[in-house]
Length: 237
Image 1 (cartoon, rainbow, N blue to C red):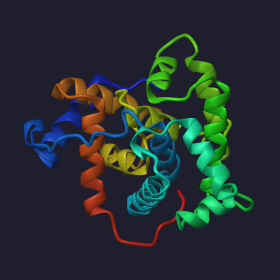
Image 2: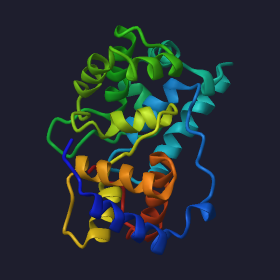
Image 3: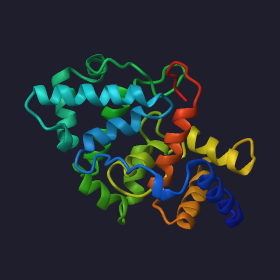
């Protein structure tokens, strides 16, 4: 990870309070999916580079389908997700069922996000991870590098943005350095842009200065940028 200056973190913290208000006024942090690894995997991969409304729709349709089948989507692990894919007939049909054929990038030949979710679930299962609890343990233990490498090998996930977000969704503190977070940090510093690792470092240090969790600061920045972002159709990043 790139180094980030303490002075820059201080500038970011001051900008946060000026633009977002003091942390005590921020709304509560959403709960994520502390017991639903299937939902966390879907959300983490589908959220990169698109309007979040599209992700909400996919999550809603998955939840509805699982409830109609008598399942509990909020507690689905990797096996339940893979079984659902099997019953659907595979990634192509899964994409049709959630009414979303977005791809992991705009590059020719890029796979469907439904395919990336399927491969990510297979990778986690191969690593012996079925639940959020097991992922939290693996990601903070001696096997962290191996599990992360399996995730990064999934098409479209090499930047590690979705990996960071996955861990946040299951309850580990962190920062998702997507374009909205980087844009806010760059504006705070008067820069044209910042690298993802630099953005993570600065948000983490600013969170420490503000006495909040990195996840809470990340989410409040994201909420602000989502409101001010120009409206346009969903596109891959």
